[in-house]
Length: 285
Image 1: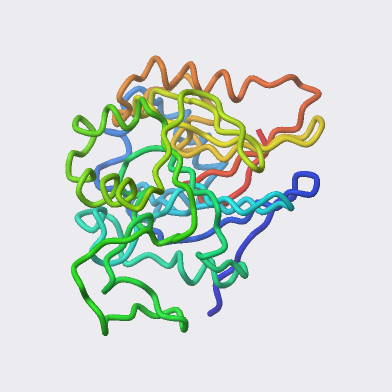
Image 2: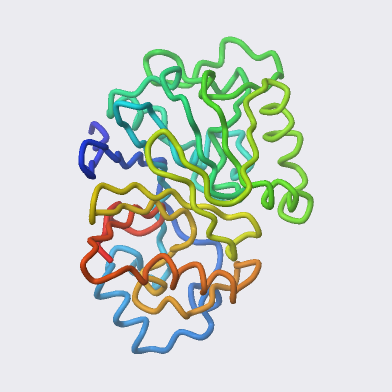
């Protein structure tokens, strides 16, 4: 069955959801959110029933987003990646991002900007790939050539990462230096940001807490906004109760502040959320 590419329009800017995979979380969801009450879980399950399976496990979507405007083409995050990606130890690889890009009419060579919200492995999987994992023109993985080298999957894009995230790399996942940041730097494709930064479409917004240099992307047209959240929101619990801490946040207090700051918009503003892990790709805050 062909992949869908759901879309949201903010003025003349198109935001496209790019599915990469889905599967259960690696630990019980009550351990991920130990402070959540039974009533809060029930509320979250009514809001997003697809996020819990028949065994009561947390079921995640893994997706990236494309932001397409007359000024350029940006991809936010790079999913779980191919079979040999850093997320292979826990995520349902290989991901389907190449097929999702094709369904959206996007050639990786046409992407001019890749925003990496943070350095967790389920958000960087397709950023840099081995030659053996490069999908062929037909969408399948082409294993006919394998040089052992690594190259940016989006060959003409500038990859944007917050400097605070880069500086925390050894604490987050030192293996990503060899598999991700060094190849990007060697290709001249890595650009470090210091806080909020204008993009061709929208702007990168520092939203630290989940990781030290976590960032999101905000697209605005008048009073209508869309926030590509990254892991600022990983579950409906955090949308309904932004104060709830998530076990896998580096700094829960900073993460709470980032959520409350971004979700606490004026009532006259319409805020759409584009989330990587909730069942549906777009939500209204």
